[in-house]
Image 1: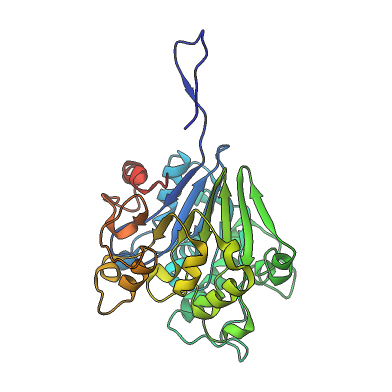
Image 2: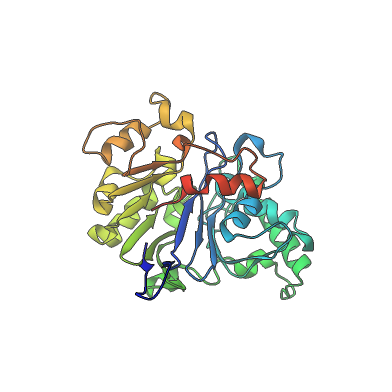
Length: 332
């Protein structure tokens, strides 16, 4: 934190800082959600997740966004950029619900969407798990959002199809694509490939975020196929200060990928049973991969674990409740 104190001043003025939050509404949510606030107050969302076992409640993300932005209910909240990694409900559900149920009084405006999904559930890219209906619901949600906001969509297409892969795709990434929002830079590294076949996790959009002199590599739910592609292309150039652990730290990329990244801080967006049940899940092995071959079960300055947070909002739909717990979820 930078503090400016003039010799004639009676008080110090703190410069605005970039704020990065790894959000979790409770310890039982297996999800990914980041909310970033730039120095100039612009909001960036990565995925959004879902509220776990309380999905019958209103979307939590609306209250969380207002808490980060410092906005009251009814005030306009603008999201400058919303990134989506891939079409699994623990990554897309909150956005889908916000847009599916969207009305003008919600006062949430999303300026830019960045995602590149393959042709799921086609002969080229079969979709073989249970989230396909959620993916279809996301498509319909885009249509509702466009209709309410009066966004013009060319005849014969949909708002989803108009956006999907339009700004981020294999072609733009091959040219070294960066997306810059104020002082935050997103370096696009990889998107889906037909060699992933039916591996929806490996279709995850991979990017690295630069803030000042720190880098955060987002693997999202990348699997072995996608991880091998990433390692083959970049090798040791994957080195980053922080890494969002692939597939919640369970069965994701290989140990060799983590060795190449060689991060000092590991970000685990995982729920309690995935963290603790070493017989059912592969999390213990992944922990050893990033900890010199030694397992551990506590969070520390090198391992931020969402299911081990000291506090969660008492009501995920309450702005006030989120304000109380945001300091716990801020990545320093």
